[in-house]
Amino acid sequence: MDKTKKGIGYLINIGVTTCRLFRVNDDNSLKEDRVISYQASPSSENYFDEIITNIQDLVKTFPDSFLVKVIVDSKFADLFQSETDLKDFIREFYVKTNLYFNILTPEQTVRNLSQLFGDLSSDTAIINIGRNYVDIMTLTAAGKLDSTSLTYSLTDVQVLVNSKKMHEVLTEENIEYLKNQIKRRIKSGLQGIKVGKAIIIKDELSFMQEFNYPLVHNPNESIKEHQYIINFENYKKANHEKLFTVNFREELLSRGFDESKQKRIYGFKFGHLLLETIFELLNVKLIIPSDLLNIHGSINSYIYNVVLSGSTQPSHVKYFAEAAKSIEQLGAKITSPQFDKEDQLFPITTKSEYAHLKAIDDCDILFVCNKDGYIGRSTACEIYYASALRKTIVFWTDPQDEQSNKDEDRLYCIPHEHWNHIKIVGV
Image (tube, rainbow, N blue to C red; front, side, top):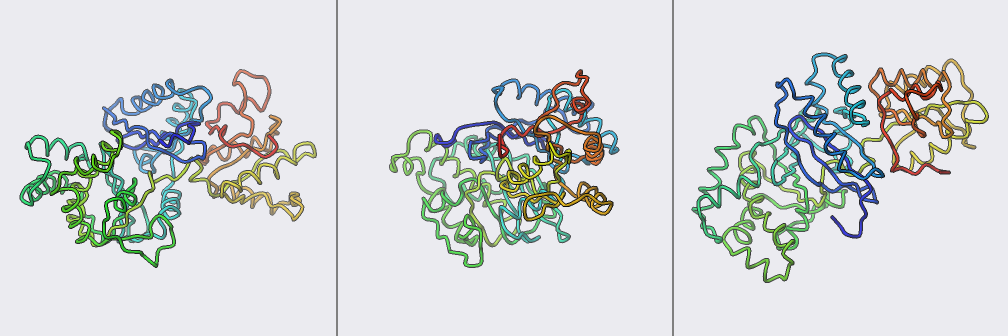
């Protein structure tokens, strides 16, 4: 992690087979911390219990002041037989962890990927390679996200090379043998995937520039991090000349890198051997290296359309404008209610009430403007409605205790997110 950045919390990304922990920096950027593989499979009786236990154990290690946020891969929803079963699990997860089990919609996921990587087509794959996993994300012709996780990883490649007691300087025969062994292990996992372009993340651009890969400027790319490309044949040639058929350890030592950086960069040798093999199987012709460290962006990703809820009584209504200003600074859009030029709410009518409920139907988040803790009955109704729709709910001031006699504190039982990392205007 960049030592100039201060950690303020963690983002937990729950998938079907693994849980990934990202450290949140004070600029809201994310840095992958670790990956936890589940012992149980989705068909196991204790699968959901294990996930809750893993999160409970994780949270115990975090400082009390840290933000903790959970996002869940959209595929997770398919594991439940009914919507009722899913809601029951969300409730159980919240009770046992005090965290909201926020399952991303496919639309949210695709939109976030498009913001990070530009307009994607069904001919493009995003590849995220780690020490113990390889994720490959593609879009179908219908624009829906499809993701594949390989059970073979960078670590497996390293074990394979070491088991054959090969020299540091590989021959072309060594390379072909290793690639054929890798293909035998990953070919079935890549069935049905054929793409012409691949975006590879995690400091790939910096690495290729550092070691003089023949990158070409892409004048058609508007995203800064993806303005360089390399065709597969040149990528393959550079891999062999700069990584595989040379003493790469000596090369790193000669550059004066410290021991930690040498170890990190040496991993690219095994990573590129695996990637080159994957590209051959997928028929990739063009590669776009990226320095992005993850597919999420920041802690504030996936916040697009927000509806504000709260009391419109004279003593409380001012909080709407305060909340709107801060939430819009995150890049989100306030879809309801509507404001005039003086930041005053338009008068409430039957038509506007219907439009407000429709906005809740379509929103990503319902933000409750209860800065002073007050929640009236109409606001409570909106909260229950949003909860029934499985919308993410955020309170400006969290309800305090489910044992409280105050009406608003009875909403404590509603699973919701905690936004203690966001400073609302005026606080």
